[in-house]
Amino acid sequence: MGILDKLKGQLIDVIEWTDNSAKTMVHKYDMNGKEIMMGAQLTVRESQAAIFVNEGQLADVFGPGRYELQTSNMPILTALKSWKYGFNSPFKSDVYFVNTKQFLDMKWGTSNPVMMRDAEFGMIRLRAFGIYSFKVSDPATFLKEVFGTSALVTVDGVEGQIKRQIVSSLSDAIAESKIPALDLAANYEELGTYAMNTVNPKLAALGLTLCSFVVENISLPEEVEKAMDKRTSMGVLGNLDNYAKYQAAEAMREAANQEGGGMAGMGVGMGAGAAMGQMFAQSFAQQPAAPAPAAPAAPAPAAAVTACVSCGAQIAKGAKFCPECGAKQSAASVCGSCGAEVAPGAKFCPECGAKL
Image: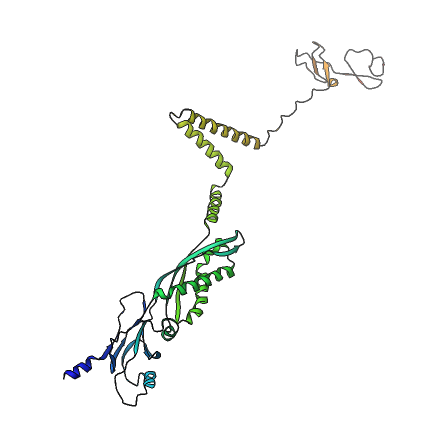
């Protein structure tokens, strides 16, 4: 009885693995020198895959579910062992559990700036960062191409390769899109989709798949950002002439409100006053000139004036009364020879000399 118990202690009848780490991708089941009993129970949980390797050669791959290990559901391993029909015996193989879940919140970023030719800024350098998620899509390919016979594989072992593929593809996407630097923020989703579609064919050769790719930020160099800030400030200020006037008025008000400022306050006030005077002078110089006053009316010609018959004051010719003395003026006489007008009381015509 003791010998049978000892023999049973050398056989494995239950094979399973629970993941206690968030970053473990591959775990090799610890046989501890034991052999697997034919008819043993294999439990593969969701987001897992179990791979049997016999003498370094990949045999059978099991997806999620519960299996009783028999020659009927282990065709590759049965062929490798050359078991006869109905022959049940213990066997020894390496069992690897592969984690097929998504590994989330993986960070990526450009280690060096990406050179880009921009229509507005010319040659500029861009930095970018974000997050991505991936998973093992083909456990058999992942075993052959990545972890081989390693007993433990974590995310740290593959994220470097994925990051470099992402940065390279994103650099190509930015360069080929020819999107202006100021418009990149409006195209993060399109750039992420392009980069993911470019990276996935390359990762498929490793048995991996990029599930999501997010561009959080694409930043310009510090000196370019400062220049953009200045340009934005100028646009916010609007009319710089009005702003300068406002600043000068504020400086004069603050200088006038200072108590005990001494010579320093006086200097500030004088400087602000000088600036204000210059500003007003420029403002007045820019105003349109006032129209010139109309020239006074020219005096009436002497021929249109005559003397009052009573007081001798100058009155308009043809007036019936004198504006000075009110005397009635006599009607003008007409020469009977030439028809010219003659002064009242004249004896001869001043034009033809005829006697009146």
